[in-house]
Image 1 (tube, rainbow, N blue to C red):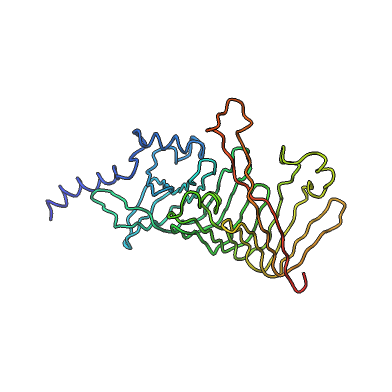
Image 2 (image 1 turned 180 degrees about the vertical axis):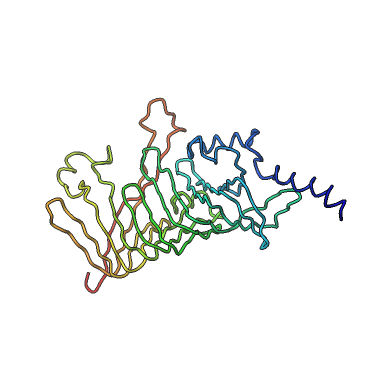
Length: 325
């Protein structure tokens, strides 16, 4: 035992500490350099993710961290932790999850400390304050930011019972009990494109306190409406925000292309002249219709193969149900 303690242990433990073999290894070498080229537009150059970060890949998800500790329950604590979830198509923005305090990761097999080999992440928990964001489309729209804490995560969904702030472009929501459903990895690329937003199937706030809705107006969509239509429909070009409260859940379902509010729904629009438009109902449902914006077709020197279209969802039909509405 003495020989093992003083001769063998120093040869084993420091080597594992210095060289934990994960996908892409250290920050040097072709694999990591190629990966950093993929994420250089997602993080500042001085971010720790761009430095000596360790990397684990699993399908379209990538986990970055600086250090790890093996736990007794066959999990691994990694810290700090950032996950990048990339959609199937290049014209959709990735989803980025940042947990500075780290995460408890559940692997599909036991961590082998002798070789430093990791299994595939199949679930876990993001610790402390969490920041989930998407940089949006190339034209600067579609930016998503979610701030919350202690998020549970599996391959199919993310959820937390804590307070949540959600911001999408100029709109924002305040509430608690966040549930994000993800598309299954078994679904086809075509299904992912048509039935999700960047791989997200739905976003739900079980308890919504307030929604500040700043809709994208037709006057801001260059080339989508002529001046005569804008003149005939001044309300459609108004940028007056709408505030929504309800006692039940608020859900954006990209799979069914619906937005729903439940239980004592109250909408308010404060017009510039001081008059207030209101709507009260028990359930409000907004059906969405897909619209493709050609972002690069008008650029000079762009070939047909380089043209990309971005999926956007517009309100198509609104239904208010109540006794009365």
